[in-house]
Structure formats: structure tokens, C-alpha cells
Length: 123
Image (cartoon, rainbow, N blue to C red; front, side, top):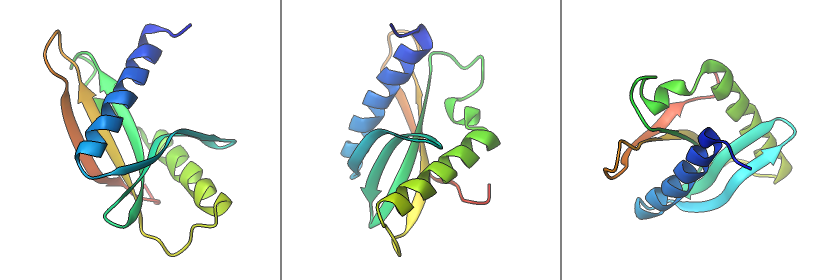
């Protein structure tokens, strides 16, 4: 059984999936898991493989959703992305790390923010 935060995360990932499709992304995988970690969405966009972290919040009291992608989380996503690329023999293809931030306040429509190239391998 999902907790409230897990249910919010699942909802956010589904909203982000459709948001990315509307913005020209081709989503390849949802919830990619390996021994090193998990990546919410893996997509293709403008010829690049894009590793997408989704953050969803119901209020601003803890800051904006994208602000919760910590150094540790970024490092884990990079390592997981490297594992994915090596595992599937993907070479010489541009890659980037995007963050989809979703704020759901009360009964209003979700507010989306897409941060392209939100971080890189050394961050």
C-alpha cells in the first residue's frame, strides 16, 4: 500500500509523462531501476537521451519541487544513467539530465516547470 508521498510521486510521474509527450519527448522507459538506483523517466528529445527526475509537491512550504534534487540525488541519477548507457551499449549519443517540477495547489491545475540540462555529470 502506498503512503501519501508515494501516491503523490506516482501521480507526479504520470503527469510528467503526459507533459513530456506534449512537449515533443518520446518516453522510452518509466521507473528504470538497477543496482545503483532509479530514474523516473528515460526519453529521447532533439536527438538526445534524456534522464528525467520528477519532483511533485502540494505546497511551497518546503520550497519548490526542483530544489529537492540534492547533490546526492544528482550523483545517484548520473551513476544510474551511466549504468543504463553501458548496459545497453549506447555510445556517442548526446545525453542530458532534465527535471520536471510539478506543483499541485488545492484544486487548481498542476503547474509544471521543465528544467533542461538541470545538472551534469560533475555536479
